[in-house]
Image 1 (cartoon, rainbow, N blue to C red):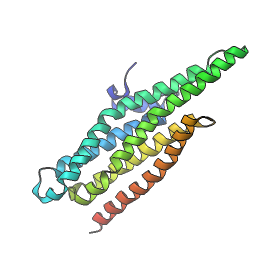
Image 2: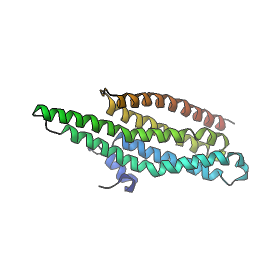
Image 3: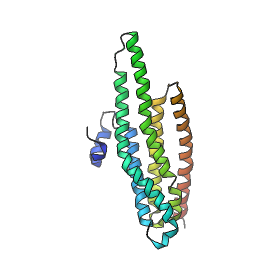
Image 4: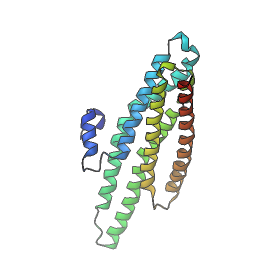
Length: 210
């Protein structure tokens, strides 16, 4: 199977637009994460080593570290998200003619669904980790690239919220401790994402109005 990270932009867009359910929103969120990381790296690289922005070098190093991680892991998480969905579909296709088969199928669906919720949760966690580095980058980084910080934040926000959506849909109807803990994390991270993203947007608009 071709990895999404090995596709051209046109190839991935065509795959996303096809009637195949994968890649879907989770994989698109992971690709957005990779792009968000790339932009954060760009701004960090335009900051580090420039005396004018010396006070921002340390914060830029943090963005660079997490940005590189997002770049590297984003496409792998896109593949993992698609594989998780495919595993759930395989579980739904299991036979259900006898009581034993129905029990095996039900357990397989639960296990596959919980596993499928994990890659998009990782997408959301990494996107949120990247977002947390952006307020300082917006405040102290290269001001000529302030809108790039803004776009990185928008993409990271989309990646985070998209990951949470895809994690949540796999957990719906699950009544066990693992699912409950993950749903609590979904709600907490969604609120956290909103707050940090709003802070970055405020800093970007503030910089543009000077």
